[in-house]
Image (cartoon, rainbow, N blue to C red; front, side, top):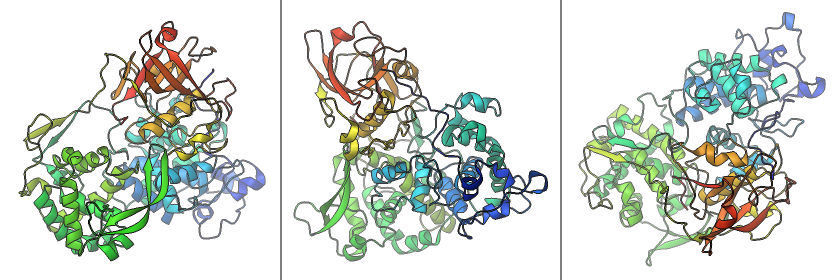
Length: 618
């Protein structure tokens, strides 16, 4: 069972990018007038004739540079997610080269959209898995969300050596190089090599770099950047612990330069006092209350809010007055449409108070309530406790919350939560201590390296061989042979075991808070050793990955194998596991799904190891 965790030369984006190239073949973008390309949205994408290099200013010249409204929207989204100006400019250089900032542009190699995702179905799969099932895949705003959300997860190092010949690569990581770049041209090359991955021989690199530089120098002056973020909900396990200092609190979590929209001003003026009062009474950072309520209620415009004063989508309990409405819910098998009985409140103030009662009345939110002075940590703990199923919930809510923090600070409307004298004490920690202290140090829970196997079953994966269509109902939306999935959308080598393992693990554990790593199937466990957030050991648990070489686990070929532990049961040899796997028959076809039982005795002659991430919930 050969499995390759590496990308083919033809990556996510295609080369036949514009009507011009469809007509004359792959053409260097530097031969196309920059003015014509920048106006591509307003002229209906009319083909433009190429000029001779000798008399063309081309995209290599910035003399006629002018910004693009879609580019600005992309920049604002990346800025809100915490990415730097240079990194964002690098993205814009690539999006320009790929699609000319046109969300409904298609190419001859099945690429589509702003990022020229290939195949187009990747967009649909991602939107379906992230609560956007009713949004067309051509939607500009939806694609921008996808760009930001996959900024980290869609990187790999296939073109690492190529990039090293041109730029200095940080930590042998194209993602780190892009993320930490101070030079927009370096960022453009890193994003091109690690995220876009076009055919290297026809990559139009000069255009990507020049447009990135143009935007960095003169196209992003109206966008405020905090920098240093990664757009994800945590640091991906880059450190053991994080420390919060209550003396700083909310005031230090958002830059004074965050762009504040009119919606933020109007919303704060209308609902700020209610949020502040509820936060003070119940011990909740009111800044997060504002951010959550704005996101959940569509800035107060949802029917549930306008008619029933329910800002947070809270369900009715214990005979509470309610209304039945359609909604979308998600579980480990994916998202689906259903109906729910939602709480009805008598006024806006009552609706905000209902949120305070709901949070403090549920013990599972005790950890969140200990973060009363840190809005970001509070939002993260809510998500960890299961408040929301959207994989991008934290980054979405935090991006909005930062704007509220900035506006409130600029106008001195309320004190930051770090200075609020709350009416109630926070709940106790598991050890009985209060969450209020001068310096809280919180470490993520790690699974132990030793001990016996953990018995049980994950559920959801068929116990017989077949195809992968059963994954259609999951959050990866893999329904047919052309669907690549969301978390690890790479089918360049077919339906290999690495492709299956990462997507299946994301079905079980969600897409948020962790990232896949490079490696052939048999190398993955060893590649994870020593990486923060990962545990590798010899003791199986349901929901683990298993990686190694040697019969009966691997079919040979030198690349080893990786699979997913679905069940763990007792056995005379110590334990037995049921695994699910891709490429079971060696064909790497859509019909190569497999499942089988293996005992501890059978695996004793192999180098198989089990791996798991501290952010996995199962």
